[in-house]
Amino acid sequence: MPLAQANGIEIAYEIYGDKSDPAILLLNPNGSQLTNWPPSLVEGMVAAGFFVILSDHRDVGLSTKFDAAGLPDFAAIAAGDTSSAPYRLEDMADDAVGLLDFLEVGQAHVFGGSLGGSVAQMVAYRYPERVTSLISTMSTSGDSSLPSGNPKAREALMAPLPEEHEALVAHVVKLWQILEGSKYKASPDYLRQRAETGIARCHYPIGAARQMAAAMVSGLHTQWLKTIDVPTLVIHGRDDPLISLTAGEHVASLVPGAQLVVIDGMGHEITPDLGPVVVSHVVAFTGAIKK
Image 1 (cartoon, rainbow, N blue to C red):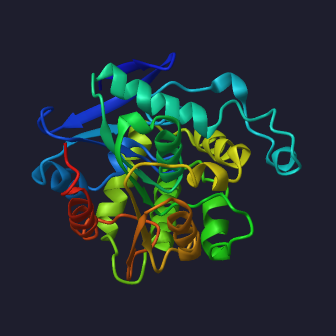
Image 2: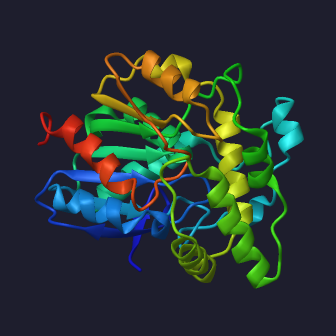
Image 3: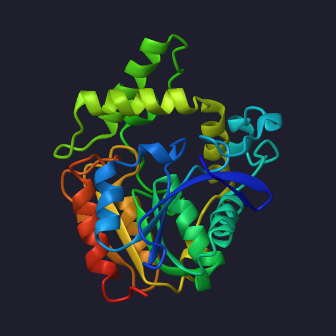
């Protein structure tokens, strides 16, 4: 696995396609590794004419870990004390641009899912000259007054992880099934294989906790979303049980000129059969602005 020296840390990455094609950088959801994107999405992007860049965020997968920071104090963060969070969304955005620098990519379409959508928004805010377009998927504006997701999904996400391997695999598969929508569902075999691959590659849940803390301490995105000045597409599932559709609609309402695509039957997962649908929307949006 190649490692990029970016923003003072190491970022694990993979690239697909022809570097002469327009670049698209895919930024993962919280705790998610680059191996979690379905091949239908990655291969579909390449077939559509993109140079695809995948990476592990800091604190997950094979990228640099922040072991010395320990577990964030979420109660303190909620009360306003952010000292236990070792980094913020801004740092993760700087990592993403550092990776583009390392790869000598001047500008890219930036596609982010969930937490990665928030990081992508931050990239567009801090580095508009590096962003051909922003594609914010399954993400939010950080406004705590918005309707929360399904309690069952949030409880499953926060539940303690089993230590025994088979129980851990079963837990991860069940979580992903809870996050799926009514129409787009992955087969149990696919989910199990993805879980096995991810656990074998790097099982590091404390990193996901610190990424969650980064999103919490970065807070409300409203003011900087209003200043984003790049072409923006917001994709959200009507069935998203974790981040409500209202949150995606709020992002689209804040970014000037943003387009909103609501996908019926989509939850909080890009499943293999949903990959081509997402690619089709990205292609339709970016077709007029490819560089």
